[in-house]
Amino acid sequence: MARRAPNRVSVPGMAFVRELEGISEYRLKKNGLRILLAPDSNAPVAGFMVTYHVGSRNETIGYTGATHLLEHLMFKGSKNFNKQKKNTIWEILETKGALVNATTWNDRTNYYEVVPKEHLRTAIALEADRMRRARIREEDRQSEMTVVRNEFERGENNPMEALDKQLWALAYQAHPYHHSTIGWRSDIERVPIARLKQFYDDFYWPDNATVSVVGGFKAREALAMIAKEFGAHPRKKDAYLPVYTEEPKQEGERRAVVSRAGNTDIVGIAHKIPNATHENMPALTILSLILAGDKTSRLYRALVDSARAIDVSVNCFQFRDPSLLIMYATLVPGVAHAEAEAIVKEEYRKIAEKGITKLELQRAKRAIRLYLASRRDGPYVFLSALNEEISTGDWTRFATFPNQLAQVTPKAVQEAAKRYLVDDQSTIAYFKATAQVKKRAKKK
Image 1 (cartoon, rainbow, N blue to C red):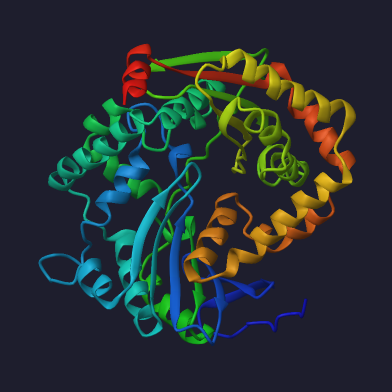
Image 2: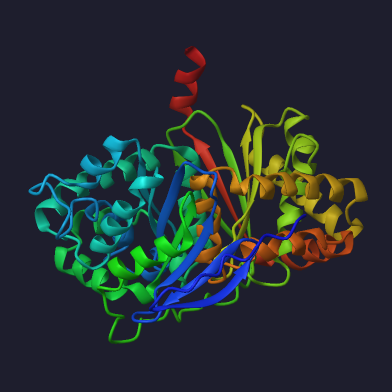
């Protein structure tokens, strides 16, 4: 692969930090804001994203879901962009064909715009304004609370989401990953506006954020615009409260059963794994693909091809703190949960004891290469992939992780299975659809 030319430029107030794979990092000296640039002179659009280093990981009882609820409130206007001035984000960007939205997750929240490149300045000004000048008002909390509660209820009515929530809550007893990103219903309904304002003032500052710009723009011009707009904010005066709670060592298998309306039964099996930057993460990523990456994978052949499951998936969650590798199998009617669980555990045992084949490793690496190559296919895809690496605390994984994956050996995968796919570190959850719903489904 041809080496990309460095994108380093000099702009007053900006400090160049490093450049990797066409991505340049800068720091705004005044307030510590981190900036990542990846210009493409041929692109007609530009993508702009602000990633705040705050998520449900930073919440606790009483205000779970605060990050997500604030996401809604921060679209209600800011000091210089609001309904009264008739220049809301929807009026000045969506009408220009822009893609505008935000997402919340365990370790981060992001706000983004993909715009015709001539409107990049507007996107920068808007995001800078709501970084410290967002309107966090009680009347908006009341209206948006009902919207968020509807989201919560839709999740509760989805068997997979309901099971996933219970599995995480059981797997984590102390660490905040115990709480789902959307929060608990009573917190959604009752969190005081003063608590949300405090949360906003605790975390939404330039030195707790990373700005990413990709696509059609000139680096010097973008940095100058960022310096002007975001430079209006100081860094936070006091320290950020760290997440110091560690999950105690698990000392045995945990189990949960969710019995409620639904048409299918599901088995979920989770195992504790390390954080995203751990040396074993490349092998665990490959292991997840060998287990359920495609129709040739171990669990697909063992469960779907044998008509025991409709679908099977394995997710290797790569978070800032130790996380989970989770398998979900949606069962064919009449198949017992215990039968599917036993089949999955047997495949885990085979890999731990006998290892994997070279062909399996080749297929997994080919699949991951295709995914990694697609991460630059358009500004939004690029921003999203880069954002997930930012949330782990090390954005350079975007550039270095592909090589780490390429170095994974069959022995490394076997050792990862042997070390992490053990019963004492597992949490098993069954979704059992109620008999009444099953009967109605059959009549249809």
